[in-house]
Amino acid sequence: MNPVSVAIVLALLVLALVGMAWSWRRRGRAQRGLAIPPVPVELGATRFTTDGLLVATTFAGRPLDRVVAGGLGFRAPAALTVTDAGVLVERAGGSAFLIPPAGGAGTASWALDRGVERDGLTVLGWSLTGPGGAPVPVESAFRLPPADQARFLAAVLPADQEAPHADD
Image (cartoon, rainbow, N blue to C red; front, side, top):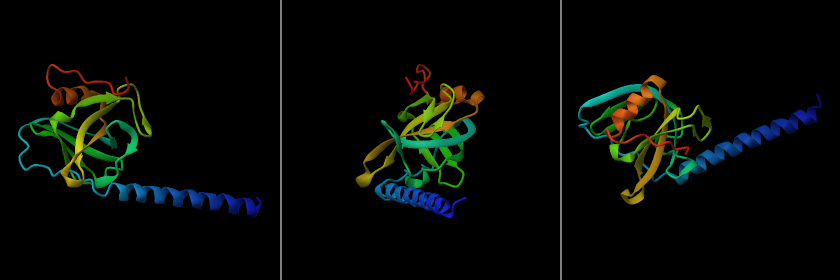
């Protein structure tokens, strides 16, 4: 191997890594004013519980714009509990958050960099707290066990509503 070629490849690799780190820090600074709302003390009765994977959280209507505020930029195993107050999401390595029932729920086949079979992801809409307390709509995609997805959506959605497909 030519040492000059190796040096060029290594330099390009280092530049790419530095660029990715810079981009991630810039995104974090831009989202500094966003916060995960606190979980209320009283959640009511538990309707359904399952374990899954928090795949990604993006801004509503901007499916390629990842939210990194509050540690939401990383995939994480999560326990999801459907309660009277909404869906309690308890992430490994992150703080818990509550998705209110009014946020909406549906299915999708992709989220950012994750593609799965048709309707393989469960998508829940909710809001972060923005500057001045303004709500900032976001969507979180979860990978649930196939046997639990329909029961989870039935527990989240009103009886007369069917889960929309985000990919349609």
